[in-house]
Image 1 (cartoon, rainbow, N blue to C red):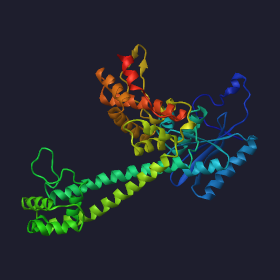
Image 2 (cartoon, rainbow, N blue to C red; image 1 turned 180 degrees about the vertical axis):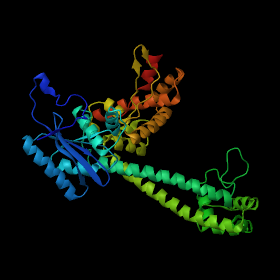
Image 3 (cartoon, one colour; image 1 turned 90 degrees about the horizontal axis):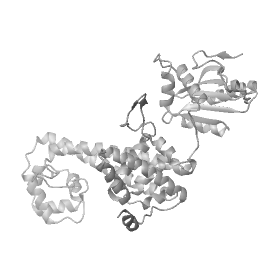
Image 4 (tube, rainbow, N blue to C red; image 1 turned 180 degrees about the horizontal axis):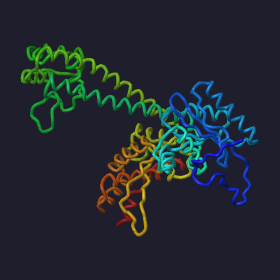
Length: 435
């Protein structure tokens, strides 16, 4: 009735029965997730394939086909114990996992790197959907997956908002670089460098006067021909709080500029004006996202982390969004592994490598946020400043010190949120003990 898969690692049918342990039958379902079509295979604990690999699409009809196949094989095997496993592939698995859990199934998620290593054991370096299914199946039997546990609506919304904000901040940086390129053609030297005497604004994007000047959409030659009072009247149409002194500075700078071709400059000015409007809309959007994330953060245990010096609400919100519900974890080491900042080790025979890097097998967003957090607290929080300096004095690289501080922060943060307490240290007592 069933088909043996010869490509499985180990002897076919090798189970816990060899230890005289009687186990209830369990139905396993391995799913290889894709964008438009998924592929699944159903097998049992003895590695017998009960349903050969089949394809189902992402529609309701495809999902019903999967349910029908599972129920059919479960009735034949006479079991209600069903375990479904799949890779955590971006966002493609999320909708499928949600509907499977709503139908009462236990779902295991696997790090794609774990299934990749399982596939490489075949040493043929061939990748197909069928081979991926067998790799997921082996990972399921080896117990490499973690059960999917939803975090709740607050954490889901926090994750969406913080990741969206991060993406918009990157767009903002790209947009500013494009605007600087156009500015260098039309208004060279508008942004003053530290070591240069030539220039007008030290902080271009934060200056309301600089933005008002760009909104006027005037060439330097046109500005140089204006009187100070005419320039002042034009600036007041765009912003408040500008005086005659600034009008004189702008006219003087415009007269000193070596201009480019008028037609080309007009095109750059038009692009600048459009990009400036887009930049202001991005600023407003990011401000709104930050206000919303601050409100959501107040409803989570992450609010206790704001007692650590150097941590802003948006930085803490990014951290708690990637961690999710902190109460679903058993210890801080699970956070360390989730972030992929746990140190690797390579030992063989008498050789034991001492300089090992972090594994970087985990949540990339969380790891990036953690290193940003580490840089902040190692600058402002005395406990972590002392810890970083101690490592640097031993000859450790600054990035190694930040990684160790991030590891330490995870353990401190876990304790704070579990105990629901603020970060309080009596520094005076600590100094007396060290003395």
